[in-house]
Image 1 (cartoon, rainbow, N blue to C red):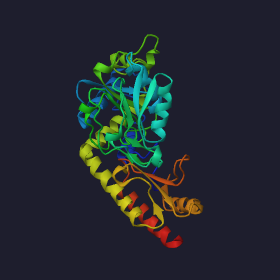
Image 2 (cartoon, rainbow, N blue to C red):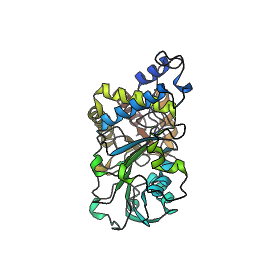
Image 3 (cartoon, helix red, strand yellow):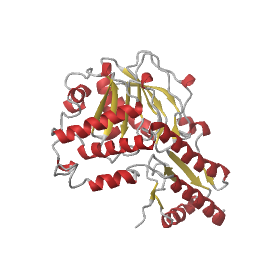
Image 4 (spheres, one colour):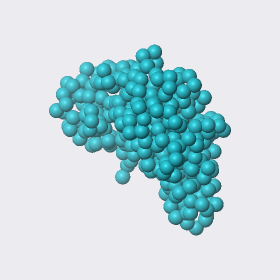
Length: 360
């Protein structure tokens, strides 16, 4: 059976080369006589896999030595609560920027631990833009500033990095991590769930500046303390071993493709092709302010929502799947991560034109 063009927001499409390599190594990794799934996380074989994955990620994103790379579990959602535990460091408040569903979830979790200053919000226009930095009302006493740089559901992406001065900037990059360069000099902590651009679900990446580690209050569960994980090289408990292995294969694949610069060029090509088609259409519409449109996640609606099911049915018949929008907003959404071939987007654009011609 031919592979489908999978536009899922996550778990999402993986490079075929990576899947093929993982399949070939499933029973016997490099002649060791066992699968990666069976390895001890403290054995020399897996330690080598993990060390290589970290080295490749550091090379790809030019991560400074002053940052720790942690391979954790629990998804970005767990980090919504872990971040204030570790970064408040005796302070009482933190700044948050509200840009949509994922930002709201982070805000909700933080409110249980500190005073949340809502420094800026895009709710006034239904979360269809990124609030300009000049509009932010930051608290000078805040422990950190948190924002979501790409809203998977709403399709809003920051095309700039906020300047927060000496206050650590914290960023949820889950749905566009590894698709563009990261200016780590401007961040205190970056985190991302892996199931978009990095690998299978189950792995969470936390890249945190060393001076921000070690401030968790007494009584913090050890598995929620960054220092515990940093001191143990992410091996304090059993990590998500197989997802780390697949992520390592993805990092090597990205390097073979030309690195982060190549991923960014492809992201611009894919999203540009789809946005051009949507903008020329009178039948399909993207609600996001053009300068804030996501390169990864493109929501769109049909002129008549009664045709949604017919659209999805026709798409599936053409091998285009997982285009249904998130249940909170409806409509459609095309997620186009690093492993999405340009041919998949071309097929989608062809189908958009065909469907509009039939139903407009």
